Every structure is written in structure tokens, then in C-alpha cells.
View 1 (cartoon, rainbow, N blue to C red):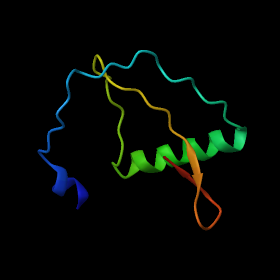
View 2 (cartoon, helix red, strand yellow):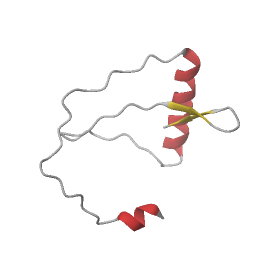
View 3 (tube, rainbow, N blue to C red):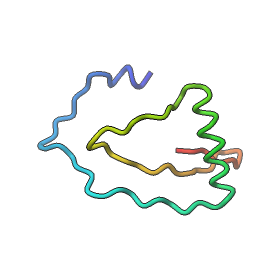
View 4 (cartoon, rainbow, N blue to C red):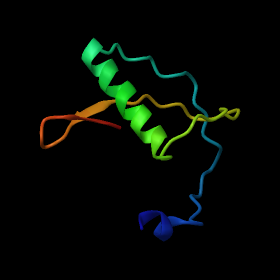
Length: 76
């Protein structure tokens, strides 16, 4: 729904943004790493994410975990 609202919206920028350095890889605990792998496998299985060839000049962002109301972790 939200994507349909913003489709075609252009942000006026004075210059192209440039990511000067890659973000540092977080150090995950064994449990966190397992949670992330399971979540990525599930998301891939339903077609929500897929492996992509990164284009030049892309922005890279780390994933992170946040607690859900039920105490389980959400991959963001």
C-alpha cells in the first residue's frame, strides 16, 4: 500500500549521494547468527528476498535484530 503512494516520487538532490566507506560487519552471537540465517532462508523461500548482483555505486547497509512483542527476534 505504501509503495503505491510513493511510486514515481522524485527526491530533489543537489548532488548524487556517495557512500564513502562500507559499514562494519557486526559481531553476532551464535544464537543471533542462527536466527538471521533462518530468517533469510524463510524470506528467500517465500520470494520476499533473492540473491542479487550488486550494482556499482550502491548503498550497503547492515541487517540488525530487534525484539518483537513476543520476545522473539525480527531481522531488519
